[in-house]
Length: 306
Length: 307
View 1 (cartoon, rainbow over the protein chains, first blue to last red):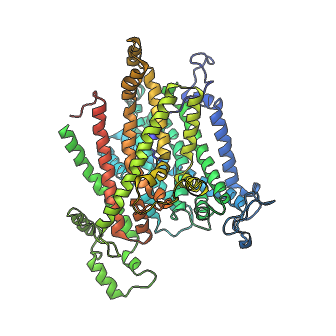
View 2 (view 1 turned 60 degrees about the vertical axis):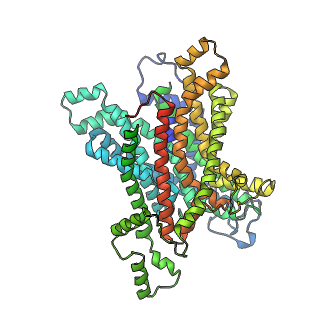
View 3 (view 1 turned 135 degrees about the horizontal axis):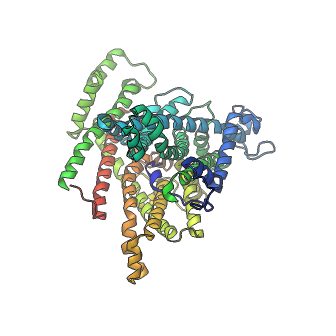
């Protein structure tokens, strides 16, 4: 879950990208070029479809699961696969299939909301710090250092153990709180790089104000790295939510969450390994989908790798 | 170099104060340690007030923090609510977690760098692709899933090892927990090494070494590895702190009585002195590890000079 890594390591560009200089006559912009590359990247297509599927079932879980995740029959506790209940039952006698399907909603909601929050807050703070520099920049960097100094799971245990709400918002808030410094560092760095470009100096010389320079010239050229880091972070945030729920401080019942189900299943793994298998598999595949998407987006957006 | 170290140590002070104060506020302001002391029963107001006074809890928060830090720098980490000295807990828990972290780091170094070098040298071949896919999968499986699955397979199904670790936690019993702890970082080390190797293979100095007619083995170990491992070492250094803090999950699964276990218990029981004491040490370890990495950087890469 170390987030500092994501910028440094790279995945090989998938074959089949456009050869430079032989495309259609008009040169493509960074974005349309990236989109051109993405459409031809099998990793992007697979992870994109998977994510689309996850989003759809987290919005309308009833589409593929007709049961009620909270309706349980203790008499059937820990029973294996049966007709109509392909994944068997958990310790409370709840249908594992239904709960696995419904668990997607919590993970996707936390992942998407936390990423949006951290990305907005981080790029706003980091971007302004990078653009204006000075004491605000120094202060922000030190504050970010402080948040980096707190181990994530530890902070979660301490901060979330006093929360009693069973909604997803405390967890989202916590992830945003510890996630924004990473995004703000990236945003700061790329804004500093973008602001040294000649066209920004030219805009300044032509008398553009700070607001116009920031919005028209700097931001569009600095946003790519933020998008890449945020996409990869989404996957790690989902894993973090599940870990916190597993430790008993993240989401709480009656919210249906893979982390909670895995924690319950782990206690009787010797008798009924199937209870662990399905939610754990669903969680891993979800995280994998987002990390693959992030890898593909990075390959498409990072011209250095071409 | 000396001046650089001093400057860095000075820069650590605000970060140290900030992080510990944040944790302090979280622990003391959010929960009520005195109420926790009484469990489910409502405390007698007079007794509660007396305990509050004894524990310095009737003062404003910043005064409590100053008092606490003053005590820490005199070597007094306070007393856990069950009467045990926090320093005793620290002395019993930290060596265990250090051993666990050591096992994890060695696994990361040996397996991660080997896999990374092999796949980096054979870029685009089958070995490379399978290593990449493997690392993606490993990154995606959260530690608590891989921990339980490996524990079940090795400890229960095949019964090769003891499923849980004894209180003494010798190295032999920490092999599997160490692997579980290392897994995700291992994948990152592999990918980082691979990228770095793949980049440096095309460097001019490497072509020169080949043109000089040096044996392949010497080229790889002396020229390629030495330059490619700099970012890897940096990553592992910063990872040490993360591993120690992230050991909570692994220690819970394998019932290891280390730092994470103590902190987890401390938080569950709202045992403020234990939590703050352990976290303070963790923050110091984290900061020192980062400093060490920056210094190591200069040793590994002579082009970097700290004035």
